[in-house]
Length: 483
Image 1: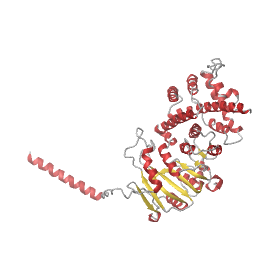
Image 2: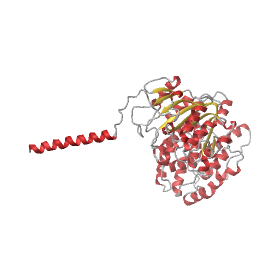
Image 3: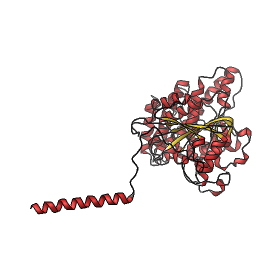
Image 4: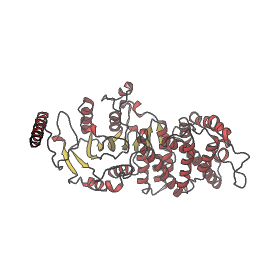
């Protein structure tokens, strides 16, 4: 049923001129889903308060509750057509009244991590893109068919929402920044093996895929109410700068079951490395930072190793944000391993000196759909020097794409072999003492791969071409002589 509702929503948005892409679909679905979720949550809390004999203070004034403005019903539970807004009246109410009211929550919230503050942050960023009030009415009616009453319902909605995020990644353009393949994330989490009671941090969280999968990994380890409170309130921490990514990530965590995520809308790179204190550090970091040039010279001054590459700034943040003994699994472009510029070499030296870089997973082309870059995953632990590095070259045995993406089975051998750092045709060990002292080159060079024929010198190629031309000319001359 829920899957059909999502399809119907897509059909409606496809006809709305204001919704032009998968990103728009995700944004518009998100804010409506969020308000519907909060209405169901409020109803449940009111019932709990009634049973406990206590008073519940609602989040919303009555006229701004979903059940009042979006889908008002009469005493029989049927649509209240007399009080239901449609057409331009509905669009004007949402744009000029509802959104302004919700944006105000950010100023009135006393706790930045409260659900009230999250509401204010979300609606400070999103906008209603429905210009046609009749289509908006249809969309609201469809969203109202979704229920968050049971964990099974939340799980189904979570799966559908994940599919929506994946479609954004498959759509290319900047949609790819929101989606890291979930099989890769799950493999990274198995290698890191987070424990209940540890803090898990993603400073470039996007759609929060790492934290959602980590929540699923730890959910079964909850044995008591204290464990549940720890998992809900003191485990997951995230930051994200991009408005739409923040909204999608927050909604994704809520749908997975994290009721009030410690997810901040902020630019991580605006924080000076020197200002990070012990209270800011975490046991586990899982991340796929954005790649590309950041031209903000002021941000670059926040880092000891100066570079315009965003991923390099994030790498410094990762190292400094780990507790002693903390573990990290991060995705980065494979060029980080071999670039010979000063920043790359300096950062590699720092990583090997401050951390034990114990594993490098070489990902094949096509791992990140639409991204067009080759990546590796670095696994390291802060607090001891690197002695040796175990490499694994992932080879699913096929060309990957939209129709045959990375799956859990592709990574099963890597996860199993990484535990013992076993050696094979796909895996090998490199000692730090054997690295080039000048460049600290960490390139993926499989010693078990067959040697490629050396490239010929240009002079040799030219000589071969001239010889072939002479042979051809002689053959033509002989043919003419026979005619």
